[in-house]
Amino acid sequence: MNINLTPIETRAFPSTLLRILPEQPPDSQFFFKKLIKDWAYFGHADSDGNEYTTDINIKLPYSVGDVVCCKETWRPCGLDSDKHGIYCYIKYKADGMLIKYYFRQKLMRKLWGSKYFNLWRSSITMPREAIRRWLKIENMKVKRIQYNLSMEEICAILGTQYHPLLNEYTETNIATKCEFINHFNSLYAKPRPVRKAGKIVSYVAYPYSSFMDYLDTCSPTTISHLLGLWNWKGKPLTIHANPYIMLIGGKEIKP
Image (cartoon, rainbow, N blue to C red; front, side):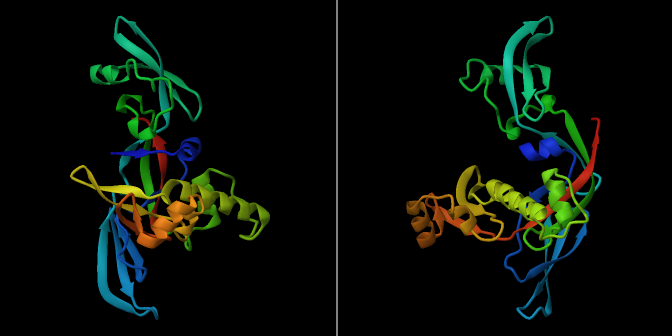
């Protein structure tokens, strides 16, 4: 079980981690009720707030007590060998730290001679043997991104200092919240593929407030295409504005 860290999360580790729920409630009338182990329970209400008996349960990928390995942005550099075999140095982008890494034969063949050998690589691709951080999950929360996050939680996610004596509308906190919104949209507002049996069948997007957050960065042609058809690259596009998220907190441990 692993978590792929963003650059901000790597620098702030082991501060609070934010992740989108693997599945969103079917409409906005569902509200979060409780969290039991790795299950999130949602109830249903009408437009007047009257609660119905309809409930849905969403299974989460993590629960309190889990130990997860945390991958981060990295790059291989400097191939060499010694009596133990062929190795290179792996560099971590967060702090520039270098470690000696002995290749598995399959990975060595894949990287050897690659034009991307000395470039930064996504955390998703990090070899398990190069992982240096492990997190024991001690608490989890399920919240709606736009309405339910406190300034203290936003600062914890960004790894910035929280000022408890400042109210939400001070210049410092407004700037911090804008930074958080931009950070969130850069990760989740762009449509991402949904695959079945290895094939892309649709796309899904999770903008902070509305899909216009992402359209602001698009060309006029792309905007016209999206607003007219609500698809992406010829596939259906589902938009979950103001999505439910997980907040994951814990402590770093040695493997």
